[in-house]
Image (cartoon, rainbow, N blue to C red; front, side, top):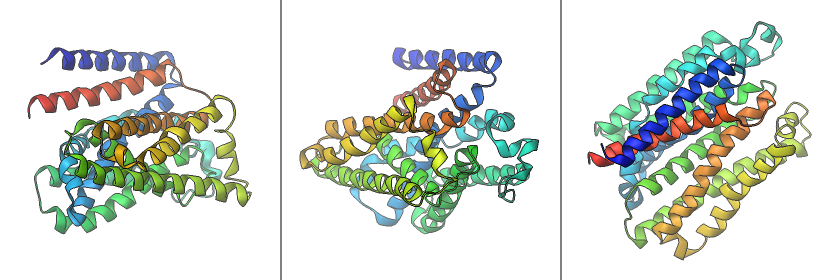
Length: 332
């Protein structure tokens, strides 16, 4: 094991110990901290599976160039089954519908513990099964239409279950699509960061694809805001109002700048799209924005901002992911 890889794993171990101590010392803060880290982490494997199966249908040199990074993301899929366990132990602390007083909610057909466990188990099994098919080199072109449909359904259900249902009165038909666009953009950016450069023409294709995903995510996210406020939806506006004041409001603006404005205008430039360095800078901004967005989505539901426990959970998952990437690169 190289010294850099060893250092990363040490950081991951220390962060995990800090997260466990945070669970003991601040049990009211730990559930949101772990959930926000889980949400950010899940984007890479789920987005990687989506892009791998999409490439199996469409082809293109972009997928071949980014395949190392996408396969690395797919390899992380089984970790979701382990990382979800602390969430299952803290459901009542996270979700009002999981508490006895949540019986009055109108959407109890969907938001109830037995159905939640069934959906979660089915999603995990589907994701791991699709990852195994990818890693074994199965005939993805034949499997891809069914795989993409399954991913669309399970990613949407997971987004509703794990984050939207934190505030069960908030309902959005675009929420699952925004989550899927986030996963695709995040996984593409991670693959750009870890895959070797493939030449200006291929990088230009990758840059155009990233530009399309940025535009799609921006459109979906912005239109959701417009529809909520233009229609004066009483049950939906509090979700945004709670995330638009104080520090959360500044974070909301930061996410918009890092995830939409800078990447969009930068990727309009052919010179940026043809440069792997330029693509990596843009990719780094989007990855950072998605990580911050996980906090912005989860923590206001508990009426609090980020703290040391949140940082510990995030650093553990981030460091463990980097450690795994370095380990796989060493064995290539």
